[in-house]
Image (cartoon, rainbow, N blue to C red; front, side, top):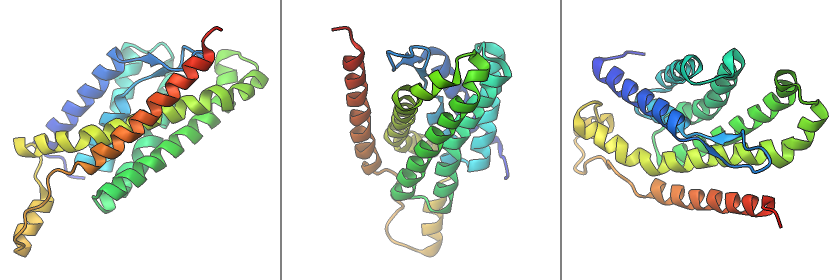
Length: 230
């Protein structure tokens, strides 16, 4: 891991964006548990890992979660641990797989693995820790696992996957055009003497993201309709 001034500037920008959206964008999804709120900070954690590297993405996760704990969170160290675990489970599979081969397929597969891993880790967390932390009987938590916690985490992670696919290509293009990061794929092609330039932008991830976002929005509407009073 070699951090340059440009990489540090990119990571700082993404960390700041993660913190801002975490503070100002908090949306309850589940009528049965309005304290479960969607936030979008994981999008910028993944982008840090995609643009700079997975280890750097992990560093951004820990730093932003620490700042969240000491500024706006009331959950203390337990909340910090939960945030770090959830974000790392989403970020690590996606960024390490993408590092091995940078393509739309690996991004989609990696993010999908992140959705599954994060959802599974939060189900386990809620089963083991939530009764101890909140005083809620474990039997009540078990009943909420398939009806509240599972859909919430799937929707939250699904939306973050969709939004990552939608905004990553445009933001990556802007970052590289600005000179903050070098386009290594383009440099490689120049060295190899290829005639065609590297593809800097692809609409395919955006299309996939829009489809996934539409599915998540539809599920949210169904959940809210089912929870509405007759």
